[in-house]
Length: 78
Length: 391
Image 1 (tube, rainbow over the protein chains, first blue to last red):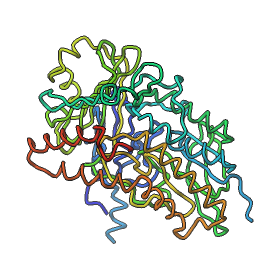
Image 2: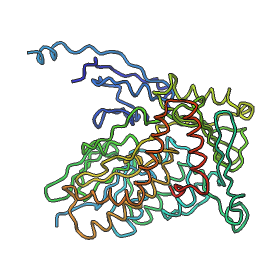
Image 3: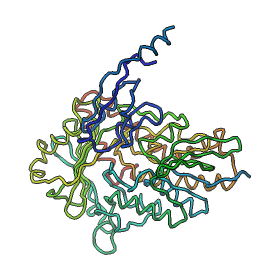
């Protein structure tokens, strides 16, 4: 398990040039993509390496931290 | 014999996929070529440069349908603007030139038309082409075939094939289906941005600008784009800069030794992409699967050029598959490693060597020395005496 707190990515579509660099650098398993050939923006990323933000040529990817769900944490803890 | 729908299902109709399809269909294999897009070649993520011998080697005619402009040589600049020129009109004037009886050294192609042209050639050779069709996954079966899961205009489709060819680009999902190690290091993927511009003069040369000042970890370029247009771009390695490629391109256009040349440029298109300056994938095969093109990271690690390597690799893949399937050999249990070995001996070993050269340069932490090394290496790479001129 990653020690990073999961994040939800947001893409500024106005600046996105659909270059695919974010998907190319993404270490997630197959399918962590949006219908617009970017990284997924509809579910949290639990790796949170943020490489997609660094590689983006137009600097248009941001993220917000996502609270780890309490129930899940409790189950894992016990 | 198990029932199959296709010998090959090729995922991705870029230059690598279409070239694989064309050669395989010509030899009589049943080929389905799919692409999820509605328009091939777009969005453009590439500068479009390819050598004449690169086209020739893959049996592609230099058709005006897809050529933006002919190229006759190179100009490599150091950080201050001093340059080395290899103009083949001067070096080998009886062979290269725009006059009748002479030929260009290479071309800048229109990727939309180039990709469509290659698909057309594959289709005319017998390939079935489905656009708006996405590969969802695959499953090797115990009878030696595999099941491939597709989605076409929202419709789920299941087909049986002998081999899936992953030609789905740098963002490849196909390799991930088989659990191949496709992850790339952040230090080896250049974030690239380019503008198609009007109002910038070019001289039939591919111009390459080195120097950490302009493109940390990569280089900048000015390519002729036909009809008086040019393409100005650069790629940077994000660990070597605090800024995105866009910031560097803006700086290159407004502050470099080319600022007067670019002063009246007007931007007509914005394009970008990730370009691997990396080694080829170590494993490019799995049960019932091989990878070609960007998906296999068949990209020149010095220049970032991927067109020649894509079409050459596509041809190698097709020739391997024609032989392997023709002999009825197994497709599982590591049997497709023979594809990778063939590719290494024909192309890959040279790319590994280039990767070594590139890595040595960027491991030098002395910036001035590194800049000098990159300039010297680039200048040598494009010279007529380069040992690598066939890549």
